[in-house]
Length: 220
Image 1: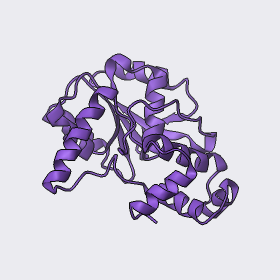
Image 2: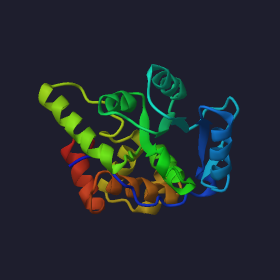
Image 3: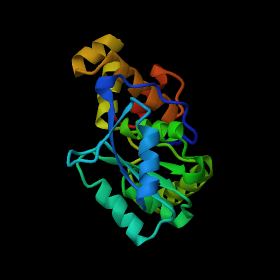
Image 4: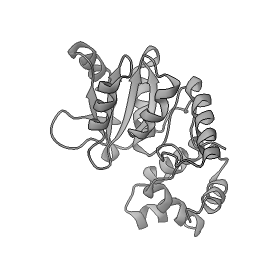
């Protein structure tokens, strides 16, 4: 079982009070303005250009070099910030470096429609992972080699976030969605989105399967 989703289904729309703050970085002003104009049409995201921290940093890069990786690291320097990378290419030996920078999703530039970008942003904001199908096999192979070699794995795709653990623990205790929302001071939609993200990202069938996974992996 892998904790990465290859092609995520369209994510549920967030209520307005759960809008995701997104900061966009691009190699040139025209590209950046084009992305911003597309994202402004979607109420799920709140674009930020000020000093307030963003939940998700959206970076557009043609190719990855040391300068691009440095920009990625700067983008996720803020506490709790994760990244979506829109790239022309990501070579196999670069993939782990990208994940270790805190990238939660990768979108090919040729596939970067507004809907696809919003989907990746929402999945990343919820602690999920979203990879193109052609990168998924590469990641699985690299993870397998690291496991066989006893190396420590980066946790971007392979772990549950604190929010996810909190929700799953209450599910395991038998609380329903409204009770979980009340206990954690979340909206019911947020609780549903957390469970949706877990089942799709981890390829699990239902809530019971999520609880079984969390128990087996030692999260609860």
